[in-house]
Structure formats: C-alpha cells, structure tokens
Image (cartoon, rainbow, N blue to C red; front, top):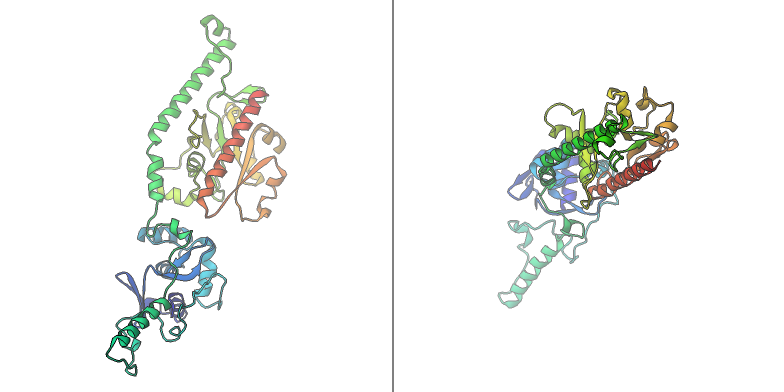
Length: 399
C-alpha cells in the first residue's frame, strides 16, 4: 500500500493515534513503515507533491485555525498544507470523497511485483517465500538481485519536480526576512525624523516669507518637490496616508510598513503577535523598493477623526474598506470631492468575489489585487501603489 492510501485508511478508521514517528520513519501500527520525507501522490494546487510528514501533521491538526496551524507547523519546522488545499485534502483523507484530480499515483515500473509488494520491509520474511527455489549457482544470485531491484522500483515515488527543487525541506526563511528588514529600522527612523524636521523648517521659512520677512533674510520660500499640494493649498509637514482601523481590511497599521517598504504582505494577525506594546497611532514609511534616489517619507494613520483641520491638507492617499461609514464626518461633501483631492486604493485577494467591491467600482479608486499564497507577487502590487501615488503627487504639484 502506498503512503497516501495508508494514511487515508487509518484516518477513516479513526486510528490516527496508531501512526507513530520513530526516528525518520512513520510506523502505521504494525502494518506499514514509510520514511517521513517520502512524497505522497497528493499534488498541491501550487504543483508540488506533499510529503507524508506534511499530511500526517495536517490530518492530526486540521481542527486548528489556519493561522494557528501554520504557527504550529513552523515551530516543528514542517512544511504546511496551503489554505486552498485544506478542504479538498481533508475530505479525501476522511473518506468523504473517493477520489480527486489532485492525486497522481505513479504506476510501478515492474508490474509483475505490483500486486505482491506493498512497501519495502527487509524484515518481512514474506518477501521471499519458502516455495521459491534457487539453484546454488550464479543464476540464483542474479534472480535474488533482480527481485530486490524490482521491489525497489515498485515503491519508487517522485521526490522532486521543478517547483520542489526550489523548496528547502524543514526550512522557514520568514524569520530571516524579518531580521533582515528590521536591521535598518533604527537608521530609517532617524532619517525619517531628519526629513520631517527639514520639512518643518522649510514650512517655517515659507510662513516667514508670507509675512514679508523671507526676502529680507535671503530665504528661498519656493515650494520644494517633496511638499504636496491639495487644491490651491500647500500641505504643511509630512504627507499623510490613511488606513481603515477595521480588522477585515488587508492593509492595516500593523502590516503596512512590510507591504509598502519591503513589498511583502504579512497577515495582520501574524504581525499583531509579533508586535510588542500598544497599537501605534502613527508610523512612517518611505519607498525603499528602488534605491536610486531619496524617497519622500509619509505618515500612516488609521484614526482620521483624530486629525486636526490643518492636518487634512496633508492627506494624500487613503486605503478604502469599501464601506460608506469609513468616510463619516470627513470634511468633504461627497465621494467625488474625496477622490479628486485624495487618491484611493482598495486592496483585495485576486480570487475574491468582485461582489465585495461593488461600492468601490463606483468610486474613483485604484483596485490592487494580491495573491493569497504567492508572496513573490507582493512586490509588484506594492510598486503599483507607489507608482500611482507618485504620479498623483506630481499631478497635484502641477495643479
């Protein structure tokens, strides 16, 4: 019996507790033994074959929420079953469905032994029966060797394909990414504060010029490129990006820095567990995905009603939730005025129903889609946000 069928059989019989790991093998009671790392016949939607270790861990922990399941697997350094595969895989392993297109059994290379050999168990005396006759000569040695080679071929399973060759078993590079991105945080905070202080100083000079003192002191009060315009007003200070404070939005005050600066979407619940201390009221972000020039710093806030009247002149962008109540008590008469003066972004998973975005489609808002699982595509989505924001800032500056 192959590993996947054995696991399904024990799952249907409610005997998962009889599957025990011994060293690098899984023992299925006294019936079977398979290597933990053996590839099963179940292929994920991403294209790779799940290992027996991944499936055993999943079927024993399927009751956990997906985020808790992922954390549990990472702790044990076990590759996970992806969210799209969870339901169909569970239905198959529990016997709710008899087959699925995700299963790709590999036929034995020597069909003569396919009916007689379940798996290679050297201690099993049944592999060579008492009825087998061998001549004590070179032919008998060759026959025994051929039998064992045939048995080995019968249990061969593909371990690598183009996708799995790029994966590292029992390796999770998420922590490496976190350490790498946090290493420069202190330097970036200092630089951001210096840029903020510089903008404040320039604003003071501009106000001095308006009072008639700028020319006398020899100051150039011409608006600089990193200042922004809202209508005919000059926003004083660092530009502001607003976020919803609701938990159901994809981009929040917790994960916006990872997304905009590093081009990586990290779920909010994961970031909340990593964050120490209270929820921040304001954070600073800047475009780091291109290092060919100094980027403008932006303040990110999720409490618009806490803004002072003069702060609204600095608001340049908003991530919308798609709900009308998000804009309650904003100092604008309608959506037309909001999205003429502020660029709007709506973040969604690419396979979500467009029904959830029916309100957004009626607004002048840019819809940005990301994948639920393909994190290497996050960078392109973040760059699209930056490109549209910078284009909007240039157009406002020319107005």
